[in-house]
Length: 266
Image (cartoon, rainbow, N blue to C red; front, side):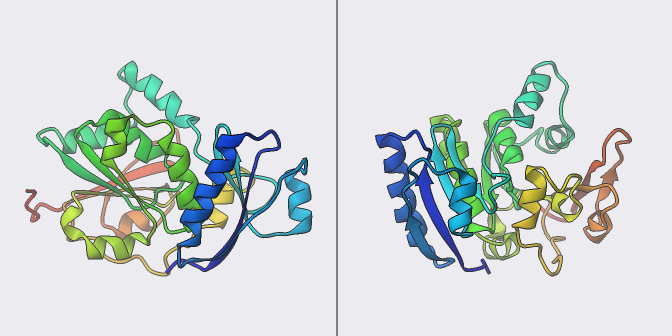
């Protein structure tokens, strides 16, 4: 269940008709969500983010020309950004593949199409990477927090082609609930549990981890054919999900893979 929340929305200080329209559209969408109790459009004037939070501590979405930014506090915004993704895409052009791509290349060699379920979308970086690299993939990006879901999905859409927009499905739900309702859509399930132990509490990952709902229990996903998990190397997730942990000495981020041989892919 999503926590019921309130939200303020506004524009950048230097605004225009397009940003005003985005605010109006956001108000229309967010007002219809049962998980959001109250949506308020506020005038930005020339107030800084700090000044806006001195008046009211309600979370704030600011629409800028580069996309929407979500503030739970005035210090560190959450938004979609092609930072590490751009680096990975450049490396991939040089045939230096990220671990996630290496795993998927092995799994999907003979697949003409497949559904990739990103159960923990977060900043959307992995979702974006899969869309760009696999033209045969339909990606289901699931994020439970309604505000993070809205800001990341709206920000990402700006960087996608028409074909990629047809192949991406943004879902505001808990991944446990969603995969139980639509098991037939799950070909490859991917779970990023890096929020369990954040490396830097002051960066955007730290801000994200403080504002997502960590599942009270890790339910079984053993009935799916392919499961890939990403977590801190000390995480118990690898054992709980019975995955083979990919040890990488140069980083604290590890991946785990489990293949259910009894599952028949159709």
